[in-house]
Image (cartoon, rainbow, N blue to C red; front, side):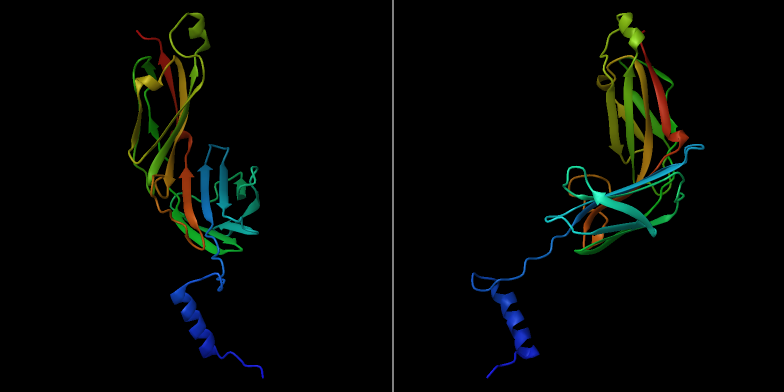
Length: 247
């Protein structure tokens, strides 16, 4: 005679499995992985050359078999990263899609479930920089605090002056990268970083989202975790500083 397993018995078995755990004789299902998601949106009004770029990377072991991502209902095109270690989704537009103060909702769906995060688009930082410094000086960039920004990222390059090399001026002749991430409204590049005459060119991005530091929990929740940031800059966020010969 075939015996039926009643709902009560099934529930009792489930409780026993929870209490005693799994063994060689009892095979428990493997828990599904929680995907890691890193996503950002960067916008630039550009003075006639407006742009929006959104990018998302999703990783898990094993990789998700499907990925769909949206920002405020706008779909990102999904694909596989060049190195094959994750799934990516991107969006590019020749316009500013979300003005400062706009609440942006990220929605991500994979075969493991759904995740989401909400961040408000910050305003742009306007940089006050010296027009010129001397080799051997530190470079200090200053800007005002802007609405909805949690921190700022500075990216720049020092392009050496080729004519200075011909004159025998001191310093490195290679192009150098300079960068800083700060919650402050200024960034200082010490004289040791300014190793040649030339021009320091770059920009300051106002960023909304979790500060990138060890132990940061991220702001994406649900069936996934990670970081969603919004970045905004305009012509006032750019700077050019001439580095001249030591007097």
